Image (cartoon, rainbow, N blue to C red; front, side):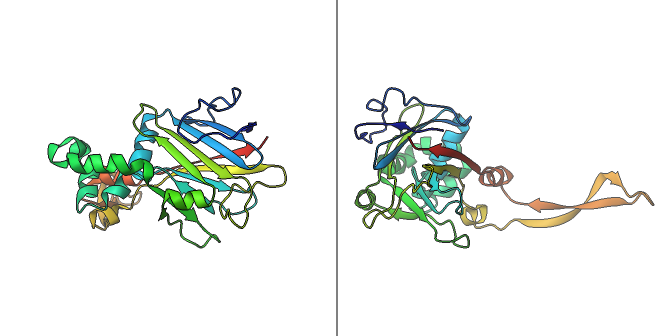
Length: 257
């Protein structure tokens, strides 16, 4: 994608109303539309979800947006926004597992106060990912919006609309007061990464999957008709395991105007 130059700062409010007229949403992926603009100091990113499954995953498990150079390792700097229902419900004993195991949990009257608390605070919760080398774990850390502003970073989200909108402002170059930035290469190019990673099944349920050897009824050994065996995983909730075992990742190359 090529960024569009803007002559005036863009307000970060999860709206494209003040974006340059030619900075329309484009569809580099099947999951969401993306708009990119920049002035001399900042790059502006707007993401509008259009795939219901991806939007639901981002809402439940958090949406990671990475800014990396092409010649460096991936996931060196990223912002997680929203942080996701699963992350926020972990603060309430038993709520995260109950929500993941039962999609109707949030509609139960006895859980309404927890759901309202999470939804009211969702737009204000942000995490940062910062790694110095490939061996470091990709481990998000909670930060306040005030801490982001101190680094000249702004984020906003329209969480209630049918198509969730996320908007960000990131410094183009690092300075002493701006530790995190897009930091493009000499050609004004950087990689914009999108990632959704569910929590670990064992972490959520406390159950470690086990494996057992079973005989395959439909497979015979070529020498004596002996049935062959295969290894089969055993979990108490296969549907939840499958949901938590699916992740999403996509990268876009962006060139600043």
